[in-house]
Structures are given as C-alpha cells and as structure tokens.
Length: 154
Image (cartoon, rainbow, N blue to C red):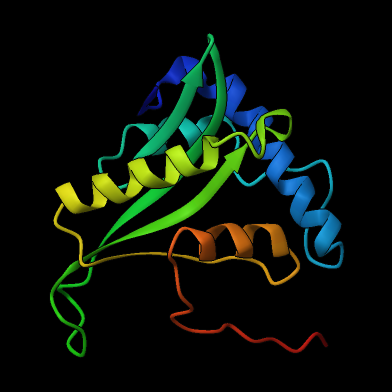
C-alpha cells in the first residue's frame, strides 16, 4: 500500500534516510558524510505538514519498505517558463533488504499518478552519476535526461 507519510512513520523514515545517504557516501565520499542524513526529526515534521512537500511511503506487512519525497513546484512566477506546475522527486529510497522487489516501481508509479492528478506538466528528479543502479532504474521507468549538472572539484 502506498500512502502519505505520517508523524509516527518518522523513525522508520530516518532509518531509510541514513541508508540512502550511505549509498551516496559510497559513490561520492568527497561530498557526502557517511553516517549522516539529509533531514532530522524536526525537519520531517515540517515537511509532512506542508502540502507542497508530499512524502509517500510503501507499507507492506506492517513495515515501511520505501519512501518518496516530493516537491510540488509552481512555475507561474517565472517569466521565461510556461506557468505550469512540476513535481520534483527530491528522494526515493527503498530499504536495502527490499530492493529489486518492485517497491521502487510501485512508489514511482504512484508519484506519477499523483502528479497527473495535481495537473503537473512533468516530473523531474536528480540522480547522482556515481549511482548507476538508480540511473538504470529511472531510465527503465521511461525517464529521459532533461539537463546535465556539471562540476569541477577545486
């Protein structure tokens, strides 16, 4: 079952946030700090109560197997862009013990349906170049490159 996350889900979401951070830290130890996470409990409480930052969880067998953090972006204030809404997937994580069991597909499909219901023009996300499994997953779900973020480490 996919549903909106609730405050009592926060401990499990924190665990998953640690897992996804450590995946990134393995790929980019020069950028991510292993053992940390993107959000803490207070941040999550604010996010869960904001209509523009929906968080969805996949719950099966009384366990949260994954989540999708989203941001509804209103582009109507941008003079050079069409006045549309866009749904940005800030983060998708599937617990390492449930990966390759269809949880990510369920979450992604749910997010697409939600974006359609919200009348969004598109769905976007960023994926780290050092995470080829994630890139392959999103490509298998029909996503295409919209733009490329480049860097030079100094």
